Image 1: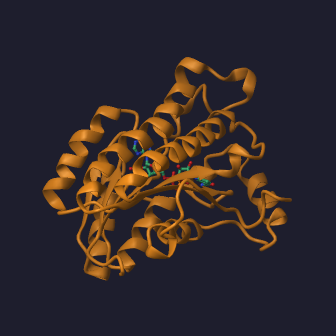
Image 2 (image 1 turned 45 degrees about the vertical axis):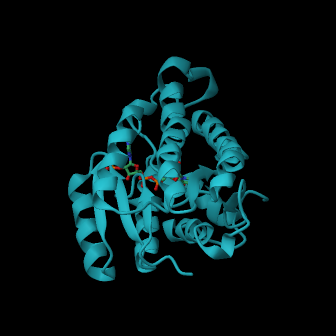
Length: 258
Ligand SMILES: NC(=O)c1ccc[n+]([C@@H]2O[C@H](COP(=O)([O-])OP(=O)(O)OC[C@H]3O[C@@H](n4cnc5c(N)ncnc54)[C@H](OP(=O)(O)O)[C@@H]3O)[C@@H](O)[C@H]2O)c1
């Protein structure tokens, strides 16, 4: 059975990987509920574009993943607009001022500020989004939850200790969730990306170097794209992935091995 008429909830789909995921699902006839934080105008443009291109229902909601109390009202709003929730993709990530003390060299890490924010935005947001989604998926007999991780939890990346540690944590959390949500027919997995060309990566102080070494290391001789990630996420939400749960799929162009 295809996914036409089902609903996906995606956090942070104004640009980059989240946006590509929204387009991938809409192309398959899936209705899309997605969140934005600061880019309301971009979000509204995406709603219009997806609805007119693919004839699906699309709505955008404001959500700050540092405010975990916002998840409950968010899903109540989604309930008013959509009749079901089948898929949840925990994608949004903080950057800029909230990560000061968390994005940097080990000796500069500040556990009470940046590090804690990254934990909230990575593990906390996954837990709250997955809990609210699971309550809805249970009503329709199951679903699929995907968290977006990064290979920076397996290989060293400059300044990435805070993010890398929390990506490892969210992968482990998704495996725990997969055990307990399995009885509701819900599969839970992670998609872990190597460097993907997005605004978030362009904000890295050593972006040009990362880009050059990624292309060098990749057996495919190129950077990763948001669409590369979206394909793996969508696959995990199809019947083709019906016995895949508690896993991490690595989308890295072969870079991690070299
Ligand atoms: N780029 C990479 O190399 C790479 C590799 C592996 C994994 N990842 C992961 O992929 C995911 C997406 O990254 P990306 O590169 O696509 O990032 P991006 O292009 O910078 O997009 C980030 C998204 O998160 C939203 N966001 C920012 N701050 C937020 C907040 N406080 N509350 C809620 N939403 C917020 C943004 O919304 P607004 O635009 O409305 O502010 C935007 O939609 C992240 O989990 C990241 O760790 C990235």
